[in-house]
Length: 482
Image (cartoon, one colour):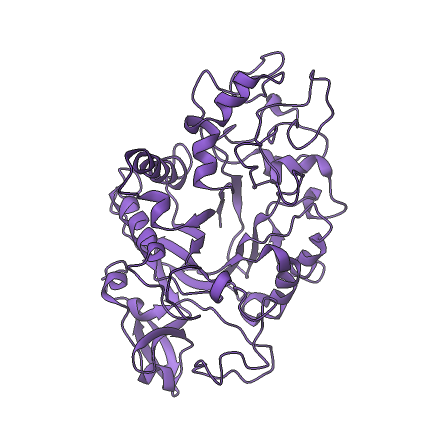
């Protein structure tokens, strides 16, 4: 199996993990970097380490130069952040040990102007080979751009800029593509991910250069021009059954998320899965699976779709949504000033987003336009071709309560089933004496502080505890074995 960790790291770029001055900001950036690598990306307690690490919201919206479809600049804040994180992964005592060879697919600019971002897909080249599906094409003879493979694009195949070449494998591996009817090997370090899609049954312009072809009528928009499309990367497992993994990383815009998810049903590569292959659609969909827009996912799942919703609001992937499952599927965090450690028992107040039940307590939810219950918005959908296996160990990586979500000795609420409580172990990073405790304190690690107390709340929100976690990201990561 291949292990994937996906994470929306809020506004990820160099200042998130490296700041030269002032000293306090520099220390906080270093603490965030160490938290990202040591407490999350190493994988669960006891291992093994992940094979793929995906970071969405690589933040290139401002002060960055980059047309849609071109390679992210390696020296801007966004590109530096991607490369710095790779360097830390390579140097880490756990991730970098045992002959692992960590690389990154050079990120491609997705969307335009105020919506432009990128996705960083890190992979262990000892277990996986990157196979495209695109190549790097020399647009206008000067600008590296991701394009599908055909005779015209192959004739102008390019190398990545040197800084990105250094972050890819130097193994001499190639993938064969049909070019002019001839099987043609293309090196791994000249391949690229996909960033644009066209309606089924229509002619796709290749190469699809800007003007006049930047937005032809048959291009699928998500849902409007300038919105980010899924970033599609493909990998071949180098051992075992040699499966092909097709990974689509998603980060929609909140204001148009429902329409964006619906548009994805037109992506031909996403609509079917071949034998020996696995499709994985993951990311921050910005559509709450417990909310009124959850119907946007219907095309993906049976009876009409091929995907399994791994963090499913329903029992056994069928029937009605079960509200008691929501805390076990949530991934979004309230801002630090609003987050509380309180549960909803023995307090004289009804359940609300700031006084809730295990595992969400009062720190999960959304604050826009007011503090509310939304927050089950990150997810993973899987589809397996014949002989390709099945998924396992879906885990919301929560270092606040820790995982797995199996507190109360297995006495979970009605409708909360094993796949939501049986994730892999991640330790809480809260600093004692701020461990969450129950009322009465039956479990000193996994419960909830029993009554509102400004001291408890302040310590919980402080930098060593929830403050550092939220400063890193307002999303929890999600992990799965595929």
